[in-house]
Image (cartoon, rainbow, N blue to C red; front, side, top):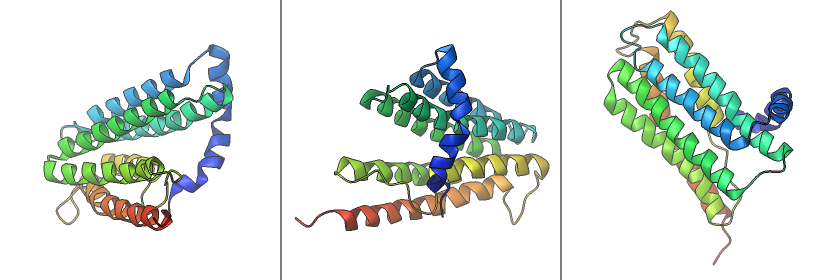
Length: 204
């Protein structure tokens, strides 16, 4: 199950923000850059979790805001009829960097670099398989157990829980278990998307 299936509903939710953005003259690319800046701030906040657990809550808020802007840039581009290949490229590149800085921040904050590496590779492979399907002539794949919307929601929830309950559970903090989830389910989702795309390809 994935939150990506609720994209149409989410698009309606961001409509008021689109209206404001149009009035003040904000461009979709500027929104994409702003979303990345929020993700960078979240990564920095998460990196200080061991020193001050409340920074996990700050990171969670910034991640939720990043998710909102991630929806806004596409909706704004469609409203302005400004969707372009260049804009799509910028959006996806910044989204991947955003994923990296947030997950690295989580790993640094709990001093679990191996888990961070496993989580980053799982997330990047999930995203790669989603867009690679489009590169071979199929529709972009959003399905699987863990899409980007799910990750952002889980990081936000995990950040709040990490601030409220910073202790360890079976050897790991809440954030540590979150990285385990991203590592395991991320790679599983990538494999799901691979087999979905492979099965959808026409026979040669």
